[in-house]
Image 1 (cartoon, rainbow, N blue to C red):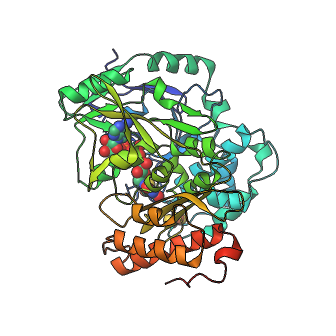
Image 2: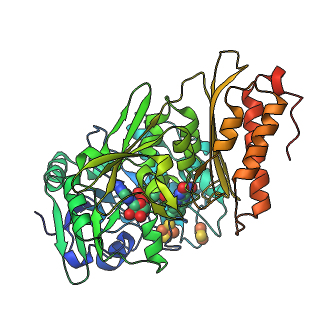
Length: 494
Ligand SMILES: Cc1cc2nc3c(=O)[nH]c(=O)nc-3n(C[C@H](O)[C@H](O)[C@H](O)COP(=O)(O)OP(=O)(O)OC[C@H]3O[C@@H](n4cnc5c(N)ncnc54)[C@H](O)[C@@H]3O)c2cc1C
Ligand code: FES
Ligand code: FES
């Protein structure tokens, strides 16, 4: 059993002093390693100033460094990974092509956001180089997508996009080629093969190799806080809402990094990130992949897990509505036994779940809807990017025939309209076995109206959420029914 976290930082092996394992990575870099290029502005994962590049060894052959937020992840969680910070991008006193492009395009004024943009754009370049694109430039669209998680208060974004599109890929050296090596890979494999147990006055940190050991530890002492990527918990810590004196991390449990997909079901392990999930469902459930584009930022998705989003039990988490209509089942491991919990039985009340003492989620499996079904996912928020939903929704109709003139069954789910994510059972019943007519739509809308109790908060009033729910469903119903059936006849949005 190891007693200290070990990681690679800018190509060098670092043994983390045990008492520093619970520090946020950004603080560790700045105050313990004097790598002050990494900035902290919001400390909530929102602005991207703290972005660093990370490679997590996994079964995949590709070695790719991805940008993550260092302000909401503890150093202990980076055990067994390889990190590269902005401080290491210049070479022999010469700026990297990304840095030079930012200078040449006047992409920086006060400079506080600049290291984060440089890291995000280096992540984009890394993606292109990994895909074998070694000449030409990044497009403006790619640059905008890559920097969704970066805020600038003074330069304005155009010069930054101009910088990104001026980077000559032919002149770029891959971060992986520069900072990763075969000996490092072998060492990381050795590091990750041994469990980690840290005990100091400041922190206890346990990273077992087997999920059963995590369940046993949780059952013995509920003070352990189970971490996925900590993109929810890290924010709560920085806001002073919680502390993490006893961290239980699953980052060394190999089996939890797997995504298994068949033609009918996808099973996603607890350590699978949302970026990996998006990649895995791109062909099978393209609507879910598109929806994940609206989830947080690249930095968050390169770290955050699907399981964390579900277990966090927020009434407005973005993935539960899809998972509810996709018949999701949670694979739960306890200290003595395993069991499966259908997601629709998982949420017992506001932030209360069916997990018992010692239980944790190993994986989530869900349906791949057939190509003949209709599926639509919606997220309504004040900003398109990097915002929390006011209402999110998932609609799925299985048709009785190819012509779509009869509904076999329907599944409807919402977030943001009750204390938990909910199914619209009454509306589903109103649709089953019916033809898609304006009358069918009216009766489903009536059922929805009676079934939800939205609250008023800063993201929207109760009345607004009610109208939103009904109009989202009406939009879906019209768009997916044969136009001859509901096209002009259905009632106008309320
Ligand atoms: C800037 C920012 C933007 C965000 N945008 C969005 C967004 O657009 N939509 C959205 O829905 N969320 C968003 N989030 C919230 C968060 O990123 C997601 O909920 C994420 O999926 C959480 O995953 P995690 O692995 O980081 O969970 P963690 O923070 O590690 O854990 C969350 C909870 O799940 C529990 N948990 C974790 N793993 C397990 C397990 N295996 N078994 C049982 N319990 C477990 C933890 O104990 C904790 O209570 C955002 C967060 C930030 C900081
Ligand atoms: S400091 Fe703003 S995202 Fe980390
Ligand atoms: S240059 Fe000042 S915040 Fe971007």
